[in-house]
Image 1 (cartoon, rainbow, N blue to C red):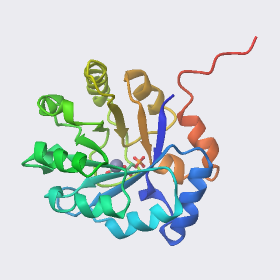
Image 2 (cartoon, rainbow, N blue to C red):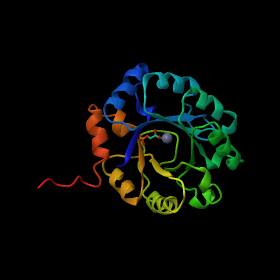
Image 3 (cartoon, protein in one colour):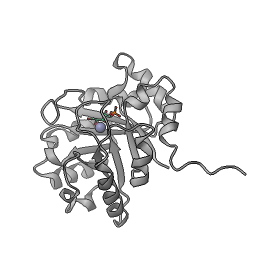
Length: 222
Ligand code: DX5
Ligand code: ZN
């Protein structure tokens, strides 16, 4: 079944501990932390200190999505803070191979992210190094944007490629995930869905998480 990773970007930061515990208790599989530096994306969010605080309040996998320049300078700090998976953007790495090596050597999972306009071919020589491929389905920077449907064919292609590899590779889709785009993304091959506003923006978080997992429909009881 698809995994749901609520993005704390849409959480109430004045009660972050409570928010994190609530989504965890509501069936969240992972927690997604959007790290933005105001350069790679037009917004500034959180650093390792927030990751460390979230770590104290949660027991599920912490997924750090780094939208920052020169991520090689910072991956260590995020791992030390408690990230279990660190994802870097191909668009922000000159030495992608080296950064992925560095993450893996630290003993955590490594992910690589692509913006909507970036082709999958950018991953051609790093497929064997990754545990996760993150396909952005909005232009990164903000929560609450509309899903870009052109990404669906990229999800299909990435899913096909991932299945041909020796190691398991998750296909994560991030941006504009709601109850209508989630089934499309899952059908195309997504194995992890990031959801900000469609989880944290809802009163009933359990219902919201379940709604995103509704495809394929559970078998009918006879
Ligand atoms: C966008 C971030 C996303 C964002 C998703 O730059 O990478 O993780 O928080 O938010 P929603 O689900 O509201 O599009
Ligand atoms: Zn993200």
